[in-house]
View 1 (cartoon, rainbow, N blue to C red):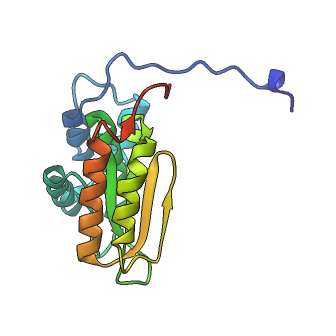
View 2: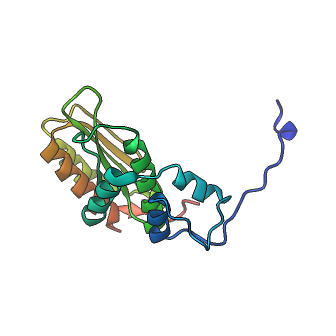
View 3: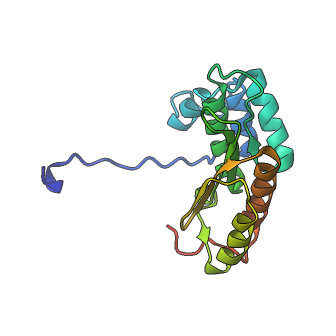
Length: 183
């Protein structure tokens, strides 16, 4: 199919950017009077209703700066919903999206740090502290570093917490993150 044959789609712009508080309230099942239920952003967040376990995990994340999805509780669907709500919240808060979650069939964890929520990318100056951090991860089984993401696999709990904390701090440091020209 030739591009000229594709239908034209107008982008939808929302005059009201969602605040972190609104995202939190929608993810907890509240209906907000100032937002329409037909708003696709509201619908996407409503599908991420976090429930009691997710609510507790997110509240802990607010204090730490990263979401720690442990394997303590059985997953009845709360993990992906909570992760989705956290990603929305990070974008509205303009903070890096840092998540620790259990790896399948393992007692280890994966840590991800994405700068997409701040519409940024790692500056070259970040490579040295990221490399130093990764070289100290003795249990890591693999990692990926891209222009806006760091993922580390196979971490034991304490290492995962240390890596998540360090990546969150690096992601908030203007010396290491560039937000220019990413539009």
